[in-house]
Length: 247
Ligand code: FPP
Image (cartoon, rainbow, N blue to C red; front, side, top):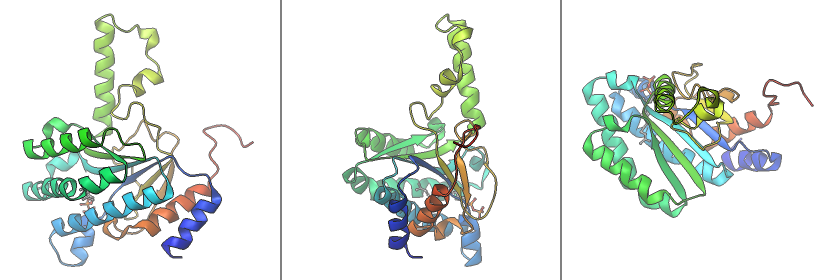
């Protein structure tokens, strides 16, 4: 089925995921299949990012979270890290005006202090510029690892308790969630992972507790609107019980 027909089906069904998260996987394999260096796969992956943002706007999803660079990715060869960071700056430079015009609030979540100054500057500028937008929140996770995020929240809580600002009784799930990078945002309703892999890879371990999973067989550069709508159709066919029994 083509994208407009799938979109019509998604709309006819009604219940939309408020928050869609995606583990974008398979850029390297996409490049290898074409005998190209890995950065070519990442460049094609950037086009897929554009496609899914357009798709999310079209459907009316409120939040789109993309896992763009993990803490573990810092261990990749320096030239690949350099290529990814340049792409990130290029993406911001090329897309900032349009994202802003479309009402997208762009946020970067992760250990941003590890970014090189030029990338950090670009990230800070687009976040400040789009902070007031409300149509779609685009969360780009870079230099992100979920265990480190939870550990950081635990350390903050310990510091606040030690300083007498928080009592141990007040440490509940809300208190932990409020100290994660995603504080104040709804948990993802739908997680998509591309390239057929069935792992969470240290992404949003706390936030994905009740999220529906959709594994897409295609490599990330081949993912587009059509595949996004298919994933949402799959989500719409699920019965979400949050640990309870059916109505
Ligand atoms: C996983 O594929 C993908 C990444 C590590 C990087 C994701 C980056 C992009 C989609 C492009 C830039 C994004 C933005 C927001 C500008 P992989 O390299 O692990 O692929 P493989 O498993 O096939 O080797």
